[in-house]
Amino acid sequence: MKISIVGLGYVGAVSAACLADAGHHVWGVDINAEKVRIINEGGSPIVESGLTEKMAQARNARRLHATVDIEEALRETEMCFVAVATPSRPNGQIDPTHLLRACNQIAMALAKLGNKQIVVIRSSVLPSIFDDCLKIFDAIAPGLVELCANPEFLREGTAIRDFEEPAFTVLGTDRAAAETALRCLYANQSAPIFVLKPREALMVKYASNAFHALKVVFANEIGAVCQQADVDAEAVMNVFCADTKLNISRRYLMPGYAFGGSCLPKDVRAILYEGKTLDLHLPLMTAILSSNQEVIERAFQEVRAIGKRRIGMIGLSFKSNTDDLRESPFVELAERLLGKGYELTIYDPNVIEARLTGANKAYINGVIPHLSRLLVPSLDELGDVELLIVGHHFEGVAEFLATTPASVIELTTRQRTTSASTLERELALEV
Image 1 (cartoon, rainbow, N blue to C red):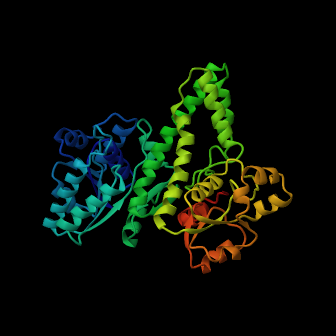
Image 2 (cartoon, rainbow, N blue to C red):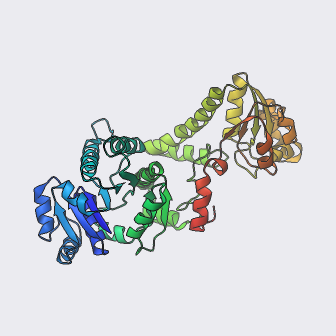
Image 3 (cartoon, rainbow, N blue to C red):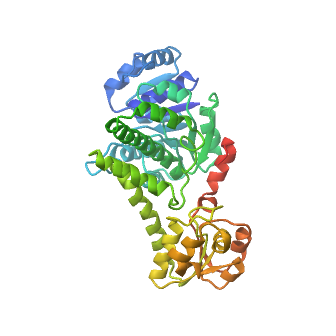
């Protein structure tokens, strides 16, 4: 393919060299004439292992050219990547100035040339900025641009390996022709390719980097507690990382409702207390419980916004397939709703059984008898509610939801994120 890359910084330079090495013809564009000169002489404008050799090979094969003239490059290409810098402003907001300027220049050049082009945002930007880019192309070069996204996951020092052997490739487009063209770029890679809408594709990059940062901070806070308690942190985390069913896995990583039960809240509080006794401040772990409370608060506000008063809840135990009500976030939501005067009916077959014969009988009747009295033995007895809050999907719930006239709020992942089940099938992983 014939590809232009606007912006020859870290991402642009690596992408240009690797795409040219894969056999594509690449035109790099940058306003910095010195970068252009270095590349055209077979060198690398950045320090990155193996990049100078790839640049030289691509130049010798006449598959890589660099220019300061964006129109010259776009005249020769069918696809244009935008890989300019998107730095932070002092308040933390992304500064899209370079990106929007580049999009404006590309749009004006394509309008002048009358060329259609697939334009791919490679820079790291949030969905709202992608929308701003789209407005520019629609206004200046209407009908000439299919705007897509292809976020990068390159680490400095291992960027070439990350490009050639990625964990996955994410394409952001809803156009079949653009998807086909983008897939051609990565035809030689064995990694899975996931096609999302552009806005979702761009968020994968932010989700990934936020999680990487979270892992570093988490490991360091555990390490601090271990060090002060005279525990071998490396031994602890080596075993922790060996668990690929729960710890290093998809478990607990799909959006849903708050956690609860007899283990997670108790153990988080215990390690926070231990940190205090060791004179350690653990801000990440301190935030876990308050962040969990915000999930319950958002659910409550969602109910309030709908404005219905007669409410049915499906699920009361802290998770499905259990009768355990200890620190259940569904119990907390139910109590908040009752406190605000909502009429509440609750269906949970596991809790009904527990009330009669289970180990939770004392807890139900002694601690939350006001909720116990609201439990009904069948879904049919939820029939006159105006709003259903679904926490668990028991047998018959799907059919009930298909016929109910009530509004429905899903608190769980199962119905909210249909793409998750698709992804699970593609990865052939058990959740």
